[in-house]
Image (cartoon, rainbow over all chains, first blue to last red):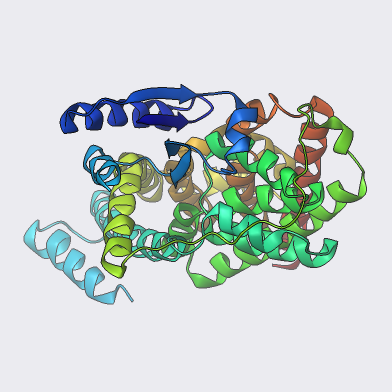
Length: 77
Length: 319
């Protein structure tokens, strides 16, 4: 599983990256977590508000700082 | 609307604590307790309502609506959408480029960019709590006007070449964005968001009202009128310049403006000041500098500043 956090480096984006890592640890799954800061790459996903979360190439959330539990639920499906 | 609360505070300060209603100390304390709680209640109500509406409209959705709209209609719609969509300066870049990608004209994007921070829910709740619905309506109405006209002018200046990052316009139309959420989830999300915001600003509100209460009780009106109440020509531009660095502290500054107004500061100057605080934000300019040429940012700030000052002068003249 590949999880990408899209964000241009604001505090919310950093917080989301931390939450994602925690959620992955909590679920005990193997996943590659990557922070994408390149604006052109972010645009390719069609996202207009950051932080956004991309799981295996699909945008699952944008403009929200998700909590750890919310991410766990998102990853579950 | 808050008569019941006034009765409670009256009873608390004048009867329970036994303070003499004619003393400055009692007045200041009464003002502090009454205003802080009133503003907290309004903040919770309004932020919750706006964030609930917002679960139906995110910026991705706004982009779909605005795509292909003609210039003037687009400016109006963009300014209106700015009221309900959230704005965080950290989202300014993806938003800006995302709009360009969808071939939304620069002017319409700017209408949105001006309106969104100006008509944010915290500012609206504070205004409503401190000044009442009439001033709030004036603020929103003239805020929209600045956003529509300002964006329209930026669009007419043909400054597309000052966008520093090459944006590849997408071909075809965007697919509509589905937001599938249960009502319960929307309510839960809105509540979490409301608490999150409140946590960030409650201290500023308390400090702002606290200083306001002090001014209210202890500083004589003549003093305020002498410094802030003058109808000298420079008071409006001065208010705008002072407002620029205060964006993050809007919650603390607004209660002060209310006290200054009740002590004789002119309403137009106050309106200009409030609009400058929310619409002209230095951090936003710094972030936009990464993708926009300084000339475009200066034009954007200049037009908004002129619009805001115009409103200030207009109000000082007619009210």
